[in-house]
Length: 270
Ligand SMILES: [Mg+2]
Image (cartoon, rainbow, N blue to C red; front, side, top):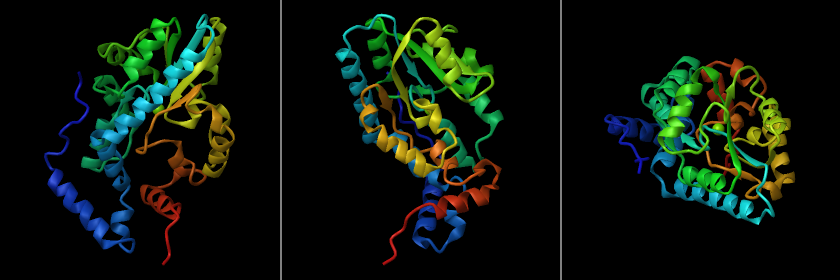
């Protein structure tokens, strides 16, 4: 068994002390709350340490098993998995951002993907194997850069993910829109009966680049799909929810991003 919980922080006491200083200073202390990586610490702490994170992942995959078992036939059926925070846990990369103060970067992200050091999300290997054993073809459709396809396949294979090969792992070559890759799977003769992902974009291209209110409206109107043919994994560390808070989020400076995040929360005013 892999060990998900990693003793990350030889300098943990220093970080904890810094974090507490931010919190105790309250909302008036912009220096703490506007630190770009401030929010990541709790999200990664939760992902790497909490039983609740594991339980939510198991709950998601258990729902997927029940849905697949309810289908009258699994013939010519396919399941599409996102990879990051759906089957592979990249929290060590995010933790590196926290402890070093570095932002996400295309170069460091590529290096992380090529290192093949991601652990499986709890329950993901078992669920993928469950599908493959029942004849459901398993595809992995991810917006990792295509330059990392060999190391990504190796990372998946290391933990026993089924059908982890170049015929089933489709990374991003041009557009981040997954629809053309889904069409490629359908052109092979498969009906896609289940999606697993941590981002609404994994389920529905129509929500891409929509502001959060519209994304939430979409989730409300699609409520019955989640836990049936759409299996949602928890990810509080990153996602489109962040860039969807304001237009042109990625064009902002780090401080502007942090400031827009702070403005987007709904605080009690006693
Ligand atoms: Mg993902």
